Image (cartoon, helix red, strand yellow):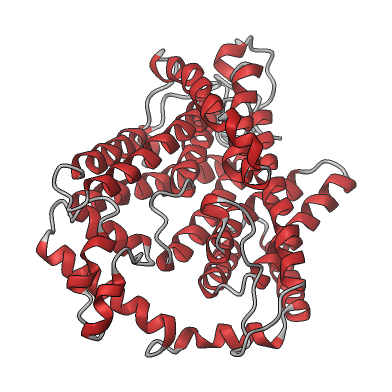
Length: 444
């Protein structure tokens, strides 16, 4: 995003000057949400990620997630429509994607699967809107990140305990097993989630003002890395490695980033069992096992795209068509492919939504990185506080971890893509408002 697109700044704020609390009267309604709205958002995040009804079924009768989501929608929509904040381009693109998904039910071979996908993404969009348009106060931003980290650390302890009680199978494989519910249930999905959340833990550690909180957030980071190892997820490992390298490259505190990377490598080297490295070494063995199967499924996805390049075969309909397109599989095996996932967000997008879907989601990702790059530039110029630049860098690292890991998982209907976009939109708005002098509080 060109700096020319940045709204006019306050004349008192210029290159080389750090924004300070200038005594400007800022109405709370413009700075952040009400306590009730923020409480609803945090409640929704806890219910969405932790899913307590999974561990205690009687809670399911109360329909708490649905109630919290409905209330969150009620308090969010006025914020989006009242005109106090420009609706970001990412919002229109994601709404367009939801519309495309819904329309695909009209031409999909299995309309019900398309409907279920559309419903899941539409519900997730409520959370996206709340994150993108309710978060205007830096303190609330930190609270949300802290809640996300704590939830994943809690689930990580469960995963570590499960791993310690797991026996290696005949091919030397063990893992954390199921650690949560929904999109955090499978160990590979949880490894991807860890890659999304880990930069937030590191960010909170750097931002901590005293030794004890800093130590706790560093400990949380170590727990997340440890759990990633115990998932035995190869996609998670690739995403973690890519994220670590990217973090070092873009970090404004290069020495600190390198020190953190070395500490992480030492931790993994000490705790990872030999079986883990044996499994990681199979990443290069693309002609056998699950790697061969995944490539065969990707070939089937390409075949669907060639036959339906504009709109795709419809949301969540790859598994319906794969028996007819899985030509790399033996004929007697193809009928067993029904309902199979493509195991890649990109091939899922290509096969099920075609060029239109690729343009919508691809444009969203481009806008996200342009927004974050602009925040980093504003921070380097001194137009916004340095911590906003650090936050943007953390979000960039989180995006890299997600996008690399998503190469091997079908996660288009998972919250990560939409909530990360919401966090990107919110952080960019805070930076723009601070550069204009409308919200000088910043992240400290």
